[in-house]
Length: 84
Image 1 (cartoon, one colour):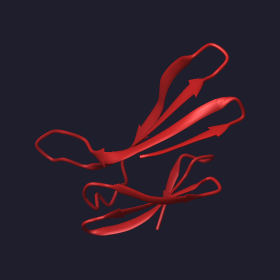
Image 2 (image 1 turned 135 degrees about the horizontal axis):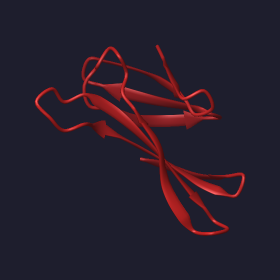
Image 3 (image 1 turned 180 degrees about the vertical axis):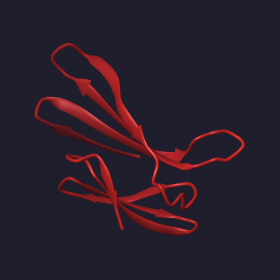
Image 4 (image 1 turned 45 degrees about the vertical axis):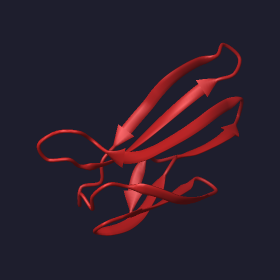
């Protein structure tokens, strides 16, 4: 998990897996607006390659780095897209 404050919002990134018969690695992005204290799931994302359960290893700028049993990669918080 990673949490930071940006532009009056608290951004939280959780990494793990979706439950089900074919568990997939997943990244969940939450935003809390400090002005009205409303928390909302911005979105959740799953990499196409399904490397397994994701673990956040670091965040630099808008890039989330993650590791997984079958590889790792990055996620861009601005474009909401995975990289290699």
